[in-house]
Image 1 (cartoon, rainbow, N blue to C red):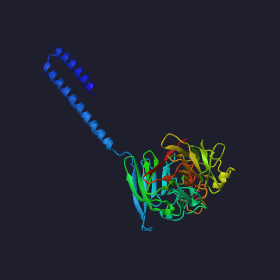
Image 2: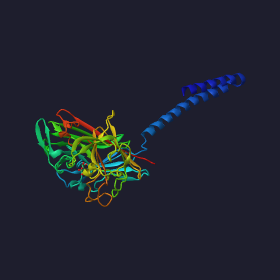
Image 3: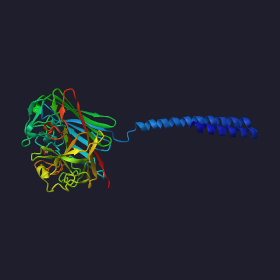
Image 4: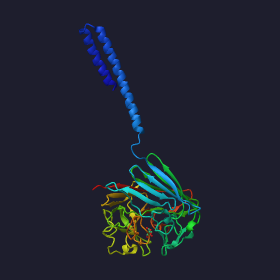
Length: 420
Ligand code: GLA
């Protein structure tokens, strides 16, 4: 800009010299041109000032909705605890409802390929319903998600006995696991995200597990449409830990429809074979040439009814896949695509396993948010976690947490649409 002004100024001075030599009334011309040169400078600075003010105004403008969080106490009926409800929202219009009870994700609303926004997770419209029996809808599961054989494990020569609430097994933390307790919740919102931080102090020997365990789970919805679930825990005695998020997804947004038409891709070459009680039997089975092969996308329904002893045990998919190891801290684990709506969900995690559960035990006894009841395969879960029964299987990655250590883990659910 400065060069341009100098050049202009130079040209005018040459023109001025020419005029002076050719014109009789030299003084008038000199006055006129000098005035016009000064005016040029003034105009230039004026324009720069206007541009500057314009830029300042633009930067302060709120063209999009910002990430936000709303909090409300929705009942006092469960005194001494109050049911608290939070809605987090980003500027693309994704909203997520969270309860302090069980850290439950009550709803996730996302747009389809035509922009129609629908709730894509199973659960209840009435938050009070979550105080009753339900199959871990949207909940944080702990202290130990999945199964522990016969509800027993040893740590440093001591045997710990847990509730057996799943046939002969201990399942999902016991009778009153993390899905049924009230968490302290605090909402937050900043420029690029909003969320809720949930904390819970699980007392020594709660549900039979040793150690006072301080757990913090943070849900964050980002501006790039990722729901991040961050887990952190510390103990004062040696213990075991396996945390997960138990949302049931149905990307159609219509829970009267089964999820068999969803296309799934899993980044896993192996899954863990189980015995008849769904306890891993120690065999890492290659998925190749089996209904468990989701290495290239296929519909969940394609092989779910195949003649296979492991599918029989789970009444469909209810197995832990071994996520292929990669260098990245957050490994892409799964991609789910629902062709009709165009909705896509990708799952990333730092955990070694993912339990694909296709809602096989949903039995039409619970009322659906979209009318009717929840039937078998009306939702699927992708529970990122450590391997089931790890406390009893020394070949599995360890789930032991020692005093002085901090357990951290993260899982991401990324929402998008495919317009094809
Ligand atoms: C997990 C288990 C299933 C079932 C559901 C809850 O996903 O693997 O077998 O218990 O939780 O119903």
